[in-house]
Length: 118
Image (cartoon, rainbow, N blue to C red):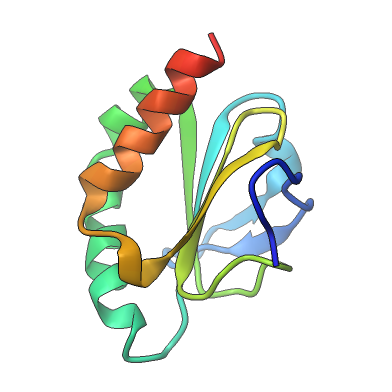
């Protein structure tokens, strides 16, 4: 299982909107907000949060981050859940989906990370 202070493993996934994403295109360029979904009933509320995040592109970009939403397995990432890492791949948070109230929770993590790393 991934944990804070570890590094994000390099991965290639298909996003929920059908794009192929190779983490190497994000690494060293932007922070990462990785949302991992599955088909469980626990994931249903988190799907709504992921959809809300997709609508908040300007906020995510302003925080210097990339949003990746996938149903693919990323080694060690919680499903459903989120991983937040700086542009160097250092993980700051690994979050189980059941603890996230709304999209603002995750965007605030990105803003914190932006302040810390500038």
